[in-house]
Length: 322
Image (cartoon, rainbow, N blue to C red; front, side, top):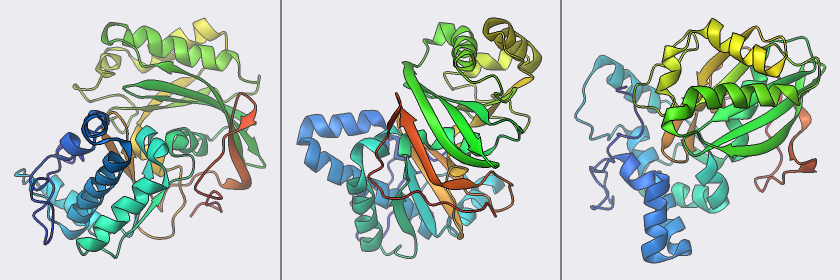
């Protein structure tokens, strides 16, 4: 995919760190890159540098300084769209781990490099954002839906509850390890089915799943390099049937969506905005103003094991969808 954030090369911006210029974002901002920084410099210094690297990437995207040699029409449109972005939300497992210090470091570097027209904030419930986006996409008239997020490191699961059509809460279930490459299909079927079995009887029969993979408009994986590429060999009807048989629940369809796209559906913004996911690798999604989503209730929360998950970023941005 020529719009990959991971291979975007940091630009030669004025006052930029020379050692970072021309480096692909994946090499500087992946989970392994953070682990290496911590091992060599210690946690506090590593976190500061990681935040600055992220700021350099955002400044590159916002100012159009991407040094990637790929010049396709799609890539040019992608760059042009980034230059319109006014707000960036940070999400994913690394964003949750690093917390407000990550956004502060990124903002500092963005300002230093002259891209101060874009705001950068840590998303509420950073590691659960794809689940929130999936829950907001449910069109069921029932009060519940299951939501799952299959990443390269972990599988996150939850049960969403609605009140008067608004998303009221998500109850997180115990996360699981991502599957080995030779057990992807079996694991995906098992995890979806097992999540359905603990959900209330009125659970949505349409299951929307977040996937660390590019996904076709019809909801099928299409990234040959993703861990979840084997899912391309399984017809949607066969997948739904397998989940239905294992769970004993009336499953009509299982549809996949890119994790960055669903993360972007997990926030509300009245300006052009993007969500950057930081985890095993980088992901991105753009907040859509034309997609009808469920509203987020004013007292929305994410709970795990019946205890409220504290959100260090303050109250959730909520309101009616555009």
